[in-house]
Length: 555
Picture 1 (tube, rainbow, N blue to C red):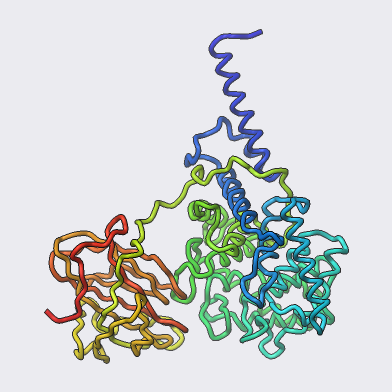
Picture 2 (spheres, one colour; picture 1 turned 120 degrees about the horizontal axis):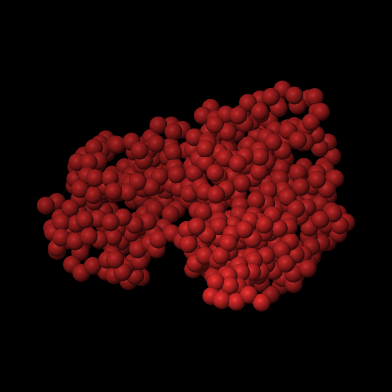
């Protein structure tokens, strides 16, 4: 028998490797196991050279744990609203199956039973057969889930009424799907097509299926824009989420329309649109924002990332515009994951998980167990943001307001145009501000509603001005919520430029305040519905700053 210090060191090293292999084997999908076995001695948790695959699976297992904790006693995951009563449950189950949980897992099985009982109850209690299914999104997701559950008649038989619902609610005028309420759009169409494709893979199709696919292709092409991208609706601007959706839909329509001569001309037009769209997404590639017109914000970010994965998988892409799309997306999601394992809402968590698992219309691969030892602190994360203001920290409610100022029609540029010589702006009641005049407005709530103030109309930008009065020279944090995008100027310098659509909270910017008065100018856009903001000043720990005030009176 060999002995000695070197021998015992080698034994200890081999034992460490074996322990690592055992843990890794429990976590990783079979395709990643070989790589994990070649990784050598275990590295310290969170080291930069730790294999990405291990970090990915740690993130997946944390999100699985979070999703399972959200399941209700009845087996559901609740409902987003009355129009989508089963959608969140179907999406959660779909994500959990693709994360590697088997159908026999107690909570998964309970969720499946709940979903099937819900479908049966609709048929039993609501007249009209297929019309009992009310939501395009929900129907598409349920069809994708049923495909993932396998070819058993128990699941395939549920597909036919869902498919007929989609066929009945196709808008033959716009050649797209709607909720079905409201105007049709490419997003609803994406999930209708994904559902129809899932059913097709199980041999279930609507009557005159080829005609449905051919007409849908025309509607998809109508959403293609001259800049190369795809838009939510024909009159809207290109966005990342809709461009990857359009690319995926063109590919699915191509597959379903093979040999259908009547669609030949439309298929050629669709392929041309897809080539231009690939160039658009390559030019605008990012994994940290959903580009929407001129906006680069977090709205629908996780929805976009799941669509990005789907596009890349359907087209067999390793890179997009020179970017390793999966590595960049996975690294972003790993760092962005919250301490509880989620990425925000249940839906956002599901989309992020599905990206990580590359789940585009594939059958799930089961894993034998979760990594029970997975800890959030073992994965990299973004640097902790500054401490938000404490609840008692007051908001600035009194402002001088000027606007609204319109942008170029159809260009989403109202926030970008300088309407009042912004660098030199000094608000004063009844004084000129570009082609408008400043007026004083005192909000009766913390959130300043610029529409209530008489400005903030759709597709415009509105200014709000105040003097900041500081008793000493100091650095402070200005915390902002806004709906929609916002620009902030301090002493004429642009210090924050966040062009987003929809509401966004807890943005912060550091301001170096002189002792005395300094100029603060906010510029808020509105692309529809609301135009409002909230502004608070706080110290590094979120504390209220003694002696700091705002003032709209002239010097």
